[in-house]
Amino acid sequence: MIDLAKKMRDADDFLHHLYVHMNELNQFVIFSGLTFREFVSAVGPLQNILLLKNEYEDGSFNMHTRLEFVEDKGIAKFAKKAMDSKKDLCWIDFSDELKLNLLTPQEQAELLYIGHKKEPLRSPFYHQLQNKYVYLSSEEEKVSKIYFRDLKDVLKLITQVFNGVIQEKERPTTFWRRKVSNLVPFFTEEMIRNFHEDVKDGVLFSIYKIEKPKIAYVMELRNISDDYFPDEIWDDLNSILKQKPDKILEIHK
Image (spheres, rainbow, N blue to C red):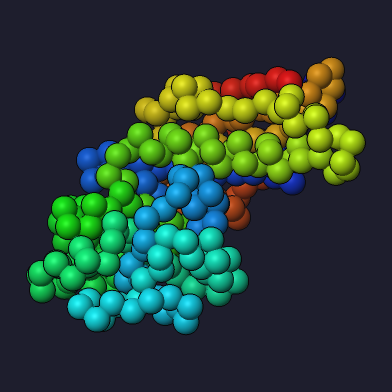
């Protein structure tokens, strides 16, 4: 009994938590605990993004849609500004500005509807734009609703978010420890694929580090009932973490 008590962890003992609920039919995923900056870092280089709701003084303006956009090379700077602003964020990516100018009035109206209602009238993937994502975040609800053209990107996103946490934790603090980074363990998409069916029902991923007897990172998965709204999870986090994990994944140095 004493041993079990020692193993009980509070929310602060974990390095990161991420709630994921996939709607496979409509090709969107609800996330909580995911920042825009983490998203950008995890999915790799983004195309240009068209801002459906936001203003950005360092962005560009498209005369055809009357909307601002951020070119691919400026997205990292925009991500930092967006984090600081604490405002809702709504955007869709696109290949180049010439394609924006081909959007019909109906398609432009649909994009405005997405920005206003945070849901599409039909499939939000446009041939003209060749977009991979539609990103809709609510700062008040601490939730991001993201549409994926290819749902396989969701597994890549989850993998890279947690690998980023590990990489930050293992970052050497001095010049002489640089070689240690070669020993950093990472999750793979193949490992995370084991959770593919779980995310359809809504799950909380949590990760912590073990120092002894050897260094390891442990990912716990807990199924979250429909009684919870995503923003409520954080208020009851310690209670949820007291529940036995439904699945565990462990990687070692």
